[in-house]
Image 1: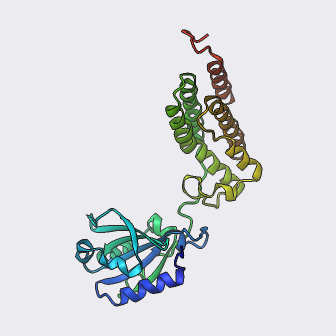
Image 2: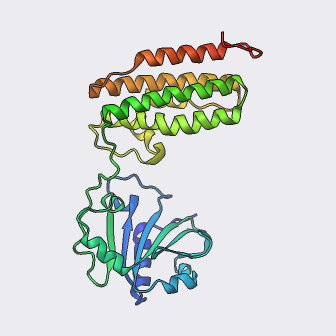
Image 3: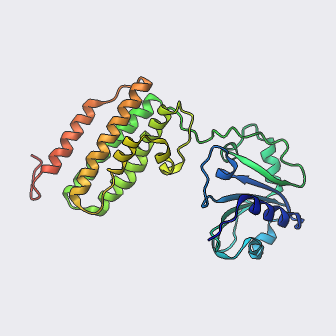
Length: 295
């Protein structure tokens, strides 16, 4: 696999676009346009084409052959959605390009916006502008996805929801309902609550000035070794007892980070709620499998 380097990709794009009258502007967005983002060999090229006519891109995908041999595209066939087309393409050399194709009229609207849309504020780079339509677009701040401080209400609501949903995990573990356990523990709790608390913790540690990326992609880069190892310990396989341990390790990590965040922001942590829910979890774990009452 020999994924194309940026300079080669950009040259291929601009050379091709300059030979096509229909293509007026090319803008690069996302990670490759943000100087603060981590990039590697698998980083996508997010390319926006602004064209005078969408029809040629609806009738055929042959234009994609200019960039290599395709493995597949998403969607399978081009479809217009409210004046734009998406072509997500994976090539045999490993290069992945996410094309968004718009009419040039939408670029004029962007120039008139008082506030830069989030995806552009996160970073953009003009690769080609035949009509000088991008000159009035505001510069990006590169802070669109920086983690922000929670309000006290958001903080308390998240903690309450976390402890509430741990009870579903406990009941399903007692019932030996592994599939639902994994849904609640590794999906709902991990991504709705634990992820947010880790983001806030990273925000506290970095003066609320970093973006750990979506779904925890860059957590390992920002977390100290101890916290990362503690996070690793919250994962388990299919064994029910291992998942009980993972539940309590998740609770321990959630507690430690939440208390730290609350202290830093001056918010009270509901320790009485936690203690009562922990008592419920332990009682459920120790309950006889043939029990007919919760004693």
